[in-house]
Image 1 (cartoon, rainbow, N blue to C red):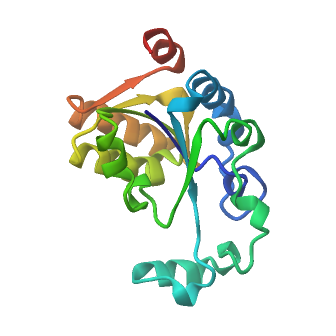
Image 2 (image 1 turned 60 degrees about the vertical axis):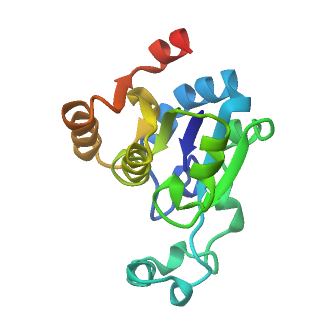
Length: 186
């Protein structure tokens, strides 16, 4: 299954959370998702309506970023970027309240019921939502394939550090590759 993390206008457009790398990795993500649309799940980061309804440490986070709550945002910014939005359906889209794709209740159990054992993870940010998703996927027993040219971050250094971490510490569970190699083998 291809899990594409948070390739939304929220991160592509000029917002406080814009990820400048996103347009550069978008062609690779589109290629993977187009070839395997029926086996793709797009996650969307879904901020709370207001900081006051956020729980725990998330409340302080959104008090720092009140302009990024649904109360303040143009609702269209939560949409997937255009080339990916056109793939739904057959691809599926799920909203998540926190960094990991698995913060979406029931996602892991739905994948396991379908017999999914390997996840191809693309999207952003490498050092935040992708990192959280991959670490939880490892804990849940999934094998993870990361086409590193289909991952993006606002920080080059953090991106490279996380990719190196996966190779150095998690090579039994995580395989770093390229989009071209992934598509040749899938």
